[in-house]
Image (cartoon, rainbow, N blue to C red):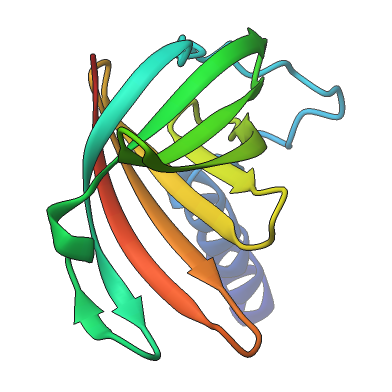
Amino acid sequence: MKITAIALLIIIAVIACGCTTPAPAAAPSSTNEALPALAIPDLTGTWTGPMTGYEPDAGFTNYGNTTMSMIVSEQQGRIFTGTFVFGSGNNTETIPFSGVIGRNGRTLTIPQKTGGYSFGEVISSGEIELIYVSDGTHYSSSIDMLRKA
């Protein structure tokens, strides 16, 4: 009788534990489900704004209040190309570039023909922040806030 009572108590405990445990989590899908497509911003056009940065010879600088322009001439999907224009009038420098828009539709990576890279973020449909870095003997860095013209 004692053995029967203990066996019955164990069976009741096992049943109670099975009824109170949470259901197992769904197994991860074995198929590669496609993520929803993100909107790719249209960057074509002219983006202009001020520059602030650091140059080894000049220190911290606003580059004499010079503005820069990023002219995106072509875009196919997330890849784009164009020219950076620094200065104005007869005192301008142009640098070709190409770039990519990250999968999130906001981040930008832009290598320049003359060296250096800009990493950026699309803040809104009319504003981009670029962070430029260049290493080597004439290292430099800058922050550029550009607005679409």
